[in-house]
Image (cartoon, rainbow, N blue to C red; front, top):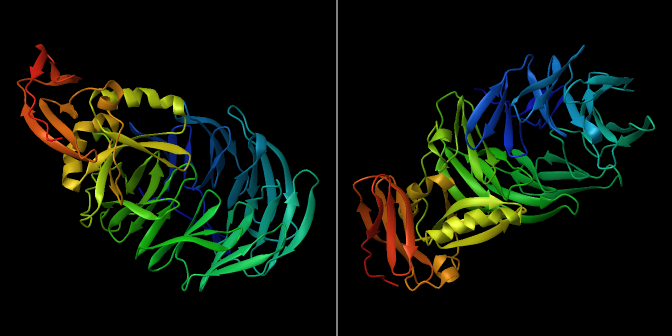
Length: 476
């Protein structure tokens, strides 16, 4: 699969949406079809025409060179199609699923719908436009195919106002209410409402730019930077060389970076690298990566990979890359926006004695089991937590942990126990910080559950029922 990451739009180029998240599913455009990705795997929705962009209103919509498609998320299929009489290079979606389509010299407005879409009107533009953005005010901003003469259009009053740009657009991107573009030394910022412009000197030209929660994330030849377009100030920077791809999602607390043959997850807004995977892809095969509900999604041609996730979603295995010593490691086992969702996960972690902690990032509360001194220890433990879709996180600091079965139930032993197939690990929390394995055992048949009861531990065997396990002396 050759992933459509961006499109040339007439004389200039803008970032087209080829990947979005909507109500627990991710939507990914390739060169022919729409791919719907969940934690259980992916399905393909056939389209006709060359895909241009994905729009998200009450549901996802896909614009191709020949039609506009409404997608039914529940059934993972197209629910309505609107055939186009001309090619459109760009589209944005407003309130009530009103879709604006940019043609060579005209703007067409289509009412989106789950059942049947209809053309509302077509408006002749006063001059050629290369790209179009929806401003927070509800107005549309059109950038010129050449020169500095942009203009805004009010869909309610049909009024057009000329806007003179301070530079000729090259790779424009609207972040909040600010137009952002690259220059030879850094970034340009321009506010269409106030007509004020500013620049930020980064020392070299950014090669990749993405948006995250009203901020601009930019990659130069040697580093990754986070800047505030409203104040044109630098917020954070970190050294990462040879960045080929960069992706963010507003609801996620991390960015994905493809640098050389490595897939790196970077915590936002701190820009601290969190984890690294080997993302070398088959030669001449397009690869990319995206944040995917708390995990990185790696795409290599037709294959997808969720590092650390279940076998069903790991058709293309991404191996961890060795991280420098001196860091701590943990396992991320869940991320929730709604506190009501915490309960079942907390009970499962506590029942097994798993020492966990939480991190709040990007509006999500992330649950992590830790800490481990080495990646090898974390990987060994991760294989016992596949049902959680656990994946390894590189941590740059540690703290004492208090959340576990023993804190909730005042058990006398500071131990925990996990099982997979016919293998059992008994572990302890040393110095209230480090997970250390006390004992690894093989049982005569698969284990369906494990329990800690005070000073005693039990395994529920698939055929034989409960069996008490011999616990070693704790090292706590």
